[in-house]
Image 1 (cartoon, rainbow, N blue to C red):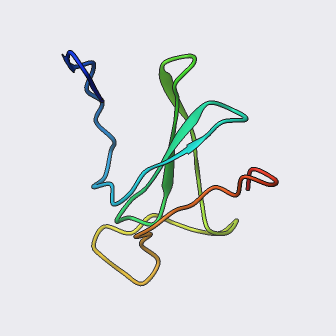
Image 2 (tube, rainbow, N blue to C red; image 1 turned 180 degrees about the vertical axis):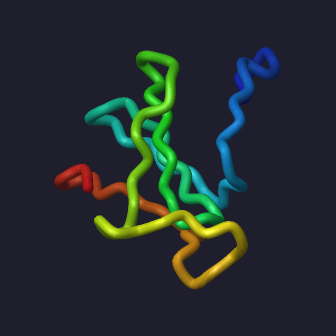
Image 3 (cartoon, rainbow, N blue to C red; image 1 turned 120 degrees about the vertical axis):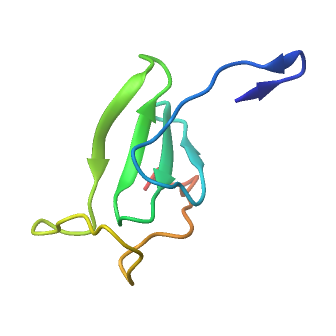
Amino acid sequence: FHAPYGKHTEIRIPSFGRAMAYEQASCHLMVPSCNGLVYRVDLEEGRFAVPLTPHAGFKPVEKQSSMAGSCIAVSPTHQL
């Protein structure tokens, strides 16, 4: 994360991230990755939350696939 005075902090997610979205209701930074998971970083607590998966039986993939996320958005109306 960058601030006007320079670099504030660095984080590393387990897989290559493609985009970022901030969810104000829970103070989470959400990052879709190339393995199909959406990693969530709780900025208030400073740790990772459980990643979101596309469906219940999903298994992360090693290589790029059609399940990989490339964009993300948070609705200002209902925070989904």
